Image (cartoon, rainbow, N blue to C red; front, side, top):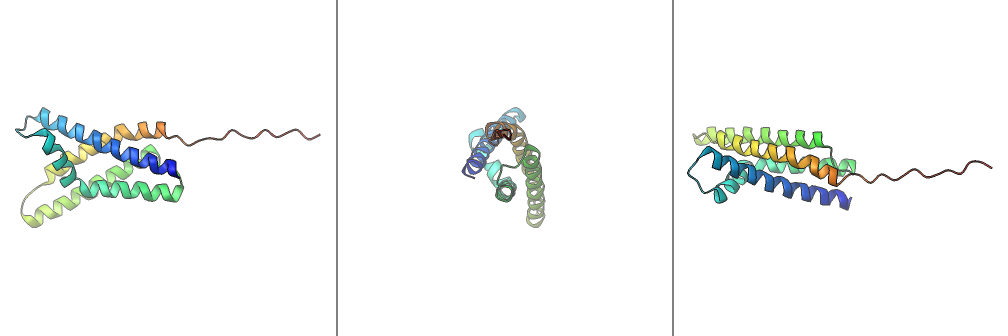
Length: 141
């Protein structure tokens, strides 16, 4: 179980780092007159906070239930669920406030999905389950 916990911590850190890099690259490519160093974390953590929490919660629950790291496809599905729930939340909050923040949530969500798409296979390759070789059975005498 400590190996699974370490894998989830490393995966979360790698996903956050990659999402910040992807979001920063997108802001630079799109030509917005913003400071990329401060705007990338602001967009990711303000407009993707619920999605990150849902994704991490799903990973932890699945890891505890299975006693193993969830597969790549399950990790991606958890990320998609987090992005969708986050977008719905941002949409509702935007409607209540009378402003639309959905474009920011979509940008942050896409950066997060790209980061999970890159990080999940790397983590699952690094933290493969340990397979014990079968024991040799002596032939009956």
